[in-house]
Image 1 (cartoon, rainbow, N blue to C red):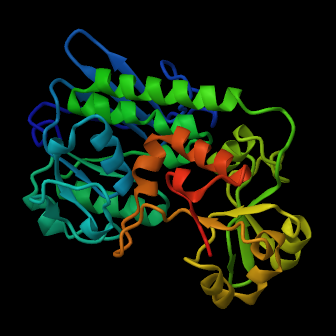
Image 2: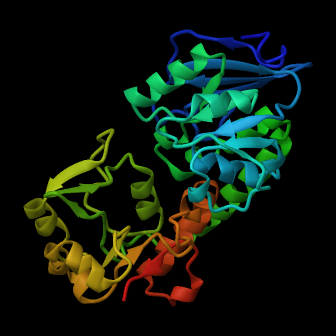
Image 3: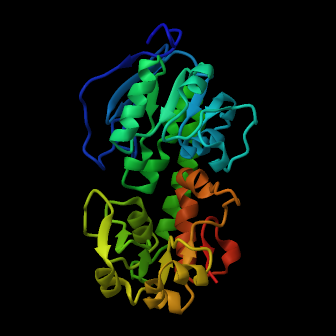
Length: 337
C-alpha cells in the first residue's frame, strides 16, 4: 500500500471506537475522526471502521463515490484535487468536466477506478454491501477511505468532517476557517430562538405502509429542536430512524402545523403518491415542504452537497418555515402548491 500511494499515505487497521456523540480529541462536535499534526505530516484517523492515513504532502488525485464530498471540496476550493467521480449526473456543483466517470456508486467500474490512478478513493460504508465494494477495490490496489459524516448525530458534527477533506488536500486551515464561520452563524441563529415551542413539525412519507421519522439522535431532530419546534420524538434515542405504522403516524402527527421532507413536487402529486398524505393538518393547510429548491431536472440536489457543509442554512430554513415566511427566503426547502 505504501508503494502504491508513493509514500504519501500510510494505512493501518485496528479495532478502535468512540462513543457516538462524544467528540473525538481535537474536535468540537464530531465523534468519527481525529486529526493530529506533526512537524512533517498530518495524520487522519477514521474511527469506525478504524483507518489511519498519514499525509506528508497534499493528495492531488482523489476520487469520490458520494456527492457530499464534492460539497466539502468545493467549500475549501479543492475541486482541482478531484479527478474521478461516481454518478456525475447527480452532482450539483459544477466540475471541471474532465473527471473520470467511475460508474454507479453502488458498484464502480473497476477498470475506470484503476484508470484514475487515485491517491485515495473517498467512500461511505452505509452497510455490508459498501464494505464488500471497498474490499473488492482494495484487492486491486485502490485505497478506500470512509468519509462517514452521516453517522454523526448533530448537524455541526456532520459539517466538521470538512476538516478531513482539508487534511487530505493540504487545506486544513481553510477547512477550519469555513467550519468556524458555519459554527458561529449556527450558534447565533440558535440563540435567537425562544424557549417556547412555536409549531409542531412532522417529517417523512408513507412508504409501503411504513412511515420513517427521525429519532432524537438524528441530525434532523437536532435541527427541529434548535429551531424551537415541537417534535414528539426528541427523547427517543434510537440509533436509526423510527418506523411507524400509518396509524401511529396519524395519531402522532395529524395536528402537526408543518411537514418537511415530503416526497412530492406538488400537493396533487403527494396525494397521488398516497391518499393518506391528505389526512394531515399540514397538508390541508398547505404547509408542506420538500428539500428540492436547488434540484436540477436530472436529480442533482445541492441539499446533499452544500446542505451538509452549511447546516446553518438548513436551520434557517426550518426557522423560516415555522414562521411561515415567504418561500423566496428559503435556501433548500421548497413549498408544495
